[in-house]
Image 1 (cartoon, rainbow over the protein chains, first blue to last red):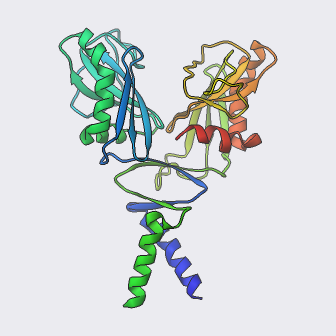
Image 2 (image 1 turned 45 degrees about the horizontal axis):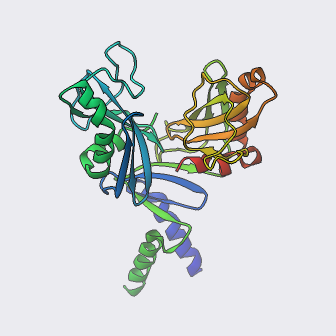
Image 3 (image 1 turned 90 degrees about the horizontal axis):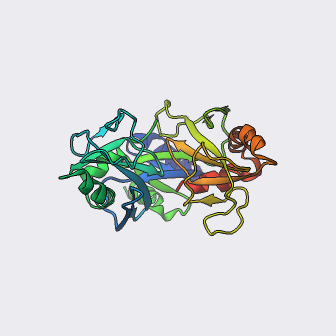
Length: 150
Length: 161
């Protein structure tokens, strides 16, 4: 009887705590991205406009782009276009404004990172800037991790 | 009082991971949860776009019933190796593969694109390029939906995180 009560309480706890906490079991794959926790490492590939950041709970990967559209720091936009009016897909080299997007394990919206002095500077620095800020900048992570989903 | 404290400790331990099969996730985290053993309730595909979608009966984001669909895409190319550069078996992932729906070949690969993403996962070979072009997208959707040969649980889902 005691076991039944304890089991019920645990089940109720996990079921009712949805607002703050959920419990995952062996049958659940949980993709957890915590904006508060800083990363432990990051990497980037300037030519491919790719970056990654490693956290205690896993590694995330993303892409970068340089367009001529500015944005608000750490803020996501629903759609980003290059100077030709095409939807940005990453790796654009058309502007001074660096944007970052999470691509794995979930896709985020484009989040504004910074403005560079030239297109060349942006191209050279954008991917590394994305990776470093995902690793060390909780406000930037909040923008990135807060813009996931369909 | 003693019982209340004991229960509190028990719950704390439970959610601190003392129970090996369980982890707890706090609200500040962005979370997607996938029930590995649950088949999709329906699927659809667009062969022209090389995209597919899978509708599940549970919330991918807890308490958000608008997030019940996984979308993905397929591609046919001539890449036959996994990440370790050995011959890929069905369900193997290739984290370096940068495939696109514009590729051409006989080897069928599948990936998830939204809201969670996966690496490219090898489905298998078709007899010729036309057969792959015509069948790869639907094959991906069906294999993930029904977990054919554990393609979903031991393949695509393992290529997410």
